[in-house]
Length: 127
Image (cartoon, rainbow, N blue to C red):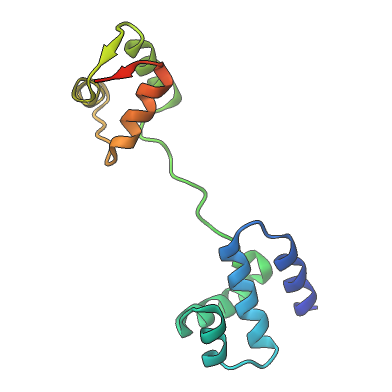
């Protein structure tokens, strides 16, 4: 039963990290030693132990990625207001956009890419 669920999970998962977890557990159940699994998969002994425990506690569900993305710093409505604001001029500087978002919403993105994405969505050219 355990092997069948692992095989199906390995065959159907779209994420290589999930597959690697399942293969490590499957190899362990097949009698491979930690050192052998570490060598073949390039993982640590802790990785193997962690996912073995997760598998025995929750089955293949325990091997799935738990991270589903972060909540955006701006709500969809706030993003829309910023894009509409950007549309009022032909050109904006990155500094102007940073200031406006910080002033209006108290948000400072850690990555400049977030600002560039908003500029691109508005169709404005960067300066």
